[in-house]
Image 1 (tube, rainbow, N blue to C red):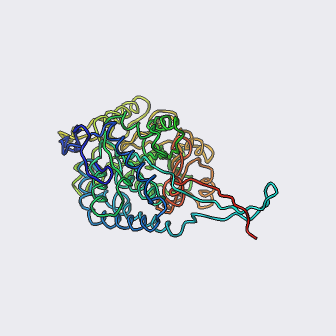
Image 2: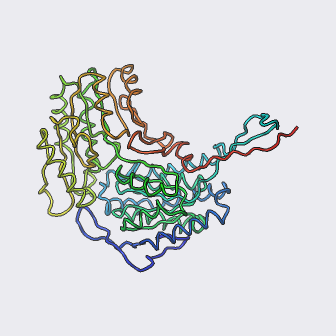
Image 3: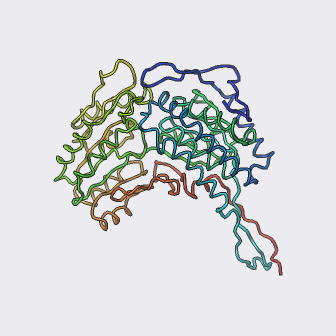
Length: 479
């Protein structure tokens, strides 16, 4: 672990196993920080924030972020191998946003250090009989606890760390216990190759829920940022409430792709059906529901089935595969439970059974489901597996009702004539909308959800501002 600039073991020497989900082999022993280790990391971050000039020295922050970017690029193959080994991510999926693009996104926050308006004046005004000048100042929020999940551990860690460090905060980063090594590697690289001062960036690993919750409840932490399930987000929000912390939550989704009656299904459905299987469906913005005109339901199901039958899956080290295992046995069991429910409530067109294709590993089949009502669990819940549900709709109003009819509000896609699709895009209650395949996913685009898909935003200027406090200073007007 990285605590106060030093690479350390757990305070009591305990460890937990790191398991390869494709083979079920133990591939390493990970320090179990426990509550004592988390306390030490929080204390180091607190001292670094309160006792150094990190929060006010933009030049130092710029230099350190550039060093971190360059060092991560130099060690990208080590990170890639860890994503495959501990996360089961297919090697074919480790390029782009999972790794190289995520490292490059650090440049966005380096640029904001110079471009952002850290102070702005308010026009002079006489208040209570005295002419006053005022400035609005943005300042670092303080110590940030960053909690990341297992699906895209490098990307999501850098998403939080780069913004928080650019803002002038100090950080305690805690990865998911299923993917600790790739995030520990970020800490090791930072310690070896950057001038980040001791205590500014700390990385702790724990498989202890109580120790993890301490990050949200501890009075020495000023802000919490979490990417995870909605259930986990509720727990973090409750734990943070006792000290009224700032909370940024990027949570679950049940994203829908809506097809209008003039959308070319044959051009779009196959790609979307295949995409839901990438990284075994373990992405919060994957379009896991397709909403198609009722008259075209059979066509859509046929196109999706053909595409999903052609998905290459299995060994994540094989560059031909786009889908490997899910992350652990519990997740596999959860997914298989949803598959069984789908067989009872509707029609499983493809897959839906435990696979005997491999002797070991947490593999599940790509699964296509239809014939379920929009209110069924497989059409409502975030399964986080390679499952696609195709639902019919009876026009635009019905499509909006179904698309928005979950607790989530993360992302939607819509396909159809440009004017109609744009009009519908403005109606969806989601944080992002793609019209006719246009991509919003970029560091300059704020990302986050409505409803129970989260609070706050990541990336863009909004992603920086989630780690800033706003201060107004008034002083007697001159002249």
